[in-house]
Length: 420
Ligand code: SF4
Image (cartoon, rainbow, N blue to C red; front, side, top):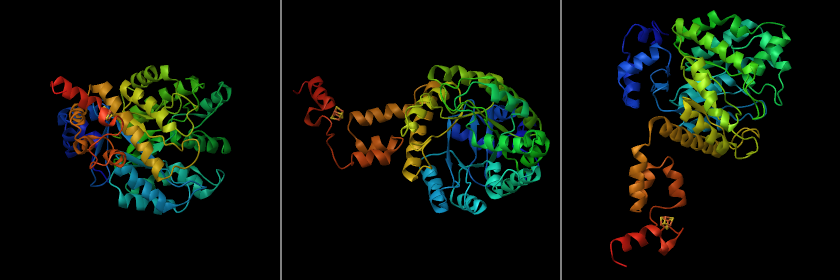
């Protein structure tokens, strides 16, 4: 539990150890990190004594992997293994979205075997364990948040940015997919069942006290996002952005750091850049977390590829944090290999986004030199997934069989050197 939160330290002008740690990793000055935390532009996630992670403007784009059991697929060991694979291939954060089996045990196992910041969506566990919205009361929701924070997680996703009035408006907007956010749908269903206001919004002050106590990050959920590219930006989405921006300010005022989940899901390609800019403007440049987005709906089975294109565009336009999409998106719970594929698709998206934000990376230049010399080992050491490259081309093989003896590089090297 914190005496003073990281945000309060920044507000007091103190350079906390975590600011120095992030500054070193991101090649920035600790004073800049402190200033950006102070004005809410970056958020630092921590997890006990594990490495801290900075997310936000001026830093490299981060990626998140969702794992966890569902009501219909309960293999806790597989989910723990997926968390390890996600971490191995470069996930910056993991979200445990378990809704089946012994949820506390699964989370404890994941905490034991990983070191990246961990996020949860507390309402998932409440509904999964009670089995019906009728049996859940506000106290259950609040105590689930407190309990999960007490387990040492780094952040919670709360769908606090919508009201009953906004739900009524959602009934009237012309959407094909309606509401596709699971956490949002669970919260909304509870509100309708109990004919009540949003319990997270109504008890926001109390929730902030819990988050402050554990110095955990508040991730403001994106309930109103579109579920297909023909469900365009509408009043429901715009009102949620405004309300989330307001809640973010309140949280920061209480010393709680914030991430805004936004846009994500499905956004037409030409809308991605202006939509990211809208979010960043409307939220005073607070860290923006985007799922995908998918710029087309027809890539079923290959959604990780379509979404990584959208993710690269979003990151290049200023999104700070991308949630991966796997090939199993819209089809089922991903297996381990699909988790790896999703991670790599989004490592690539984030890397491309950063070259748009900050210019080309010298790593590409050095790799190109090794490629020109056909130094396979050195080339693969610099690759985003050198292991995959080695599977395709064992380093012991000198020749690239694509062109074989007619390798353009070798032919021209010989001719340009004058030895035909
Ligand atoms: S053989 Fe062809 S593909 Fe392979 S390195 Fe040479 S030019 Fe490139």
